[in-house]
Amino acid sequence: MTEKRLMAVDLGASGGKCFAGSFAVSGFRMEEVHRFSHEGVSFFLPDRTGTLTERTCWDDTHIYHQIIQGLQAFRRNIGDRLDAIGVDTWGADGQFFSADGEMLGKVYCYRDHRLDDMIAAVKARMDARRIYEITGIHFQPFNVSNQLLWFVTQRRDLLKTSTRYLPIPTLLNYYLGGCTQVDSTFASVTQLMDARRKQWSNPILKALGIPRKLLPEIVAPGTRIGQLHAPLATALGLNAADIIAVGAHDTASAFAAAPVKNASRALIISSGTWSLVGRLVRRPITTDAALAANLSNEGGIGNTRLLKNCMGTWLVQELLRRWTITDGKRMPWEEVTALAEAATPFAALIDPDDASFYNPPDMEQAIRAFLTRTGQSVPTDRGTILRCVYESLALKYRFVNTQIQSVTGTPTEVVHIVGGGSRHAMLNQFAANALGVRVLAGPEEATAVGNLMVQAIGVGIIPDLAHAQPLIRAAFPIKEFTPADTAAWSAAAERFRRLQPGNAE
Image 1 (tube, rainbow, N blue to C red):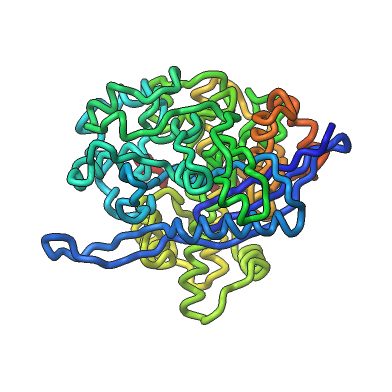
Image 2: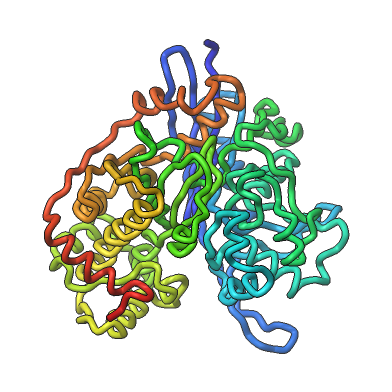
């Protein structure tokens, strides 16, 4: 087989990475060629009434520029031939364009407070049970359904005949090659797609007042949707590489890279800024029990991801951000782990998904307020606060796993942790302890791996993801963690359960 060279652009909510993937007779290999940070930026601006509001936006220009730097690095380090490129991103947000390619404002961040009350606004337009039956998607503030309802009610003057909405991965493909399609994994999480038909739901669009022509065409993962703009490719010293619609929602790509042997009994956790805790199922499960548990049926690659979006290391990232301001330097991750490991176990617990932790001005103060509100002792040192967060994350995994086992009727026999969080040995061990089953950690760059494998399908290197599994297992080491101290963790789990909404005594 002639060597094929692909590039995966993997964008999370706090940073981005570009990886070169090579497929040859000798096998598959992947190497990082560029990495960068980015974050939402807040403005305090008055509206037409003079009311000052905080507005949080992404810098899409910066992100695009970093992708260009990644392509430049590919040209320097790998070569001048690129067979394909694919972009995956976090699962929300997008941009509005006029017919002349004019951007209609900045790209709002999903943590922007304009969405605080939009779940209720969506439910007021259409019965929540019916929305869930159609889309299979749980109700979260960041859903694109909320964002577009806000736009059509609050910015209707911008809703011109030719206005188009480009979800964030589509936006970047548009910059690279004029591509305007969105893949079904990303479309599914908007809460606007019919999960079974894989098309935009006309009943939901009608109820929310969202014009169908506002939205892009939905295509299957692995579809070739265009090429790099010829002038751009020339400027980069590359050929006009194919642009492939990968599993553009990063969780879809991450789950695709999990080395799962028996999907019906494996829990998968994509661990990073968010923790996506779920299981691969054959078709959406939209029972009353699944709705009550607020489980989401996200479009997969030949399957459905039954999961819950849980808060992840965002809490720690925000603690470190505030402490950096206080200290004038950022605490290294080695110190974070050392402080947490030395702290007293189970001194305090939080519900990581409490609304107060979604986007507070000061995460430490938000945690202290939660502990006070729930009648717990408030830690006086950073190590205890950090351990509280990590233990609570692991207990949340256990709580969600119990819900998934109940809804599916099958037990979890192994946990696969993929993504950046899979390198965190302490959290992996906490997860094994909390769930009482083996944890297999890796690959840590699962999203990029899944991205590349879907590209490989798109350009004809492999026929399907089943053929990707041996390539993944051969290329990446998997670490195993076995349960310990399960009695203490079970006792803590009962304390944690009482912190969940509706379970307080």
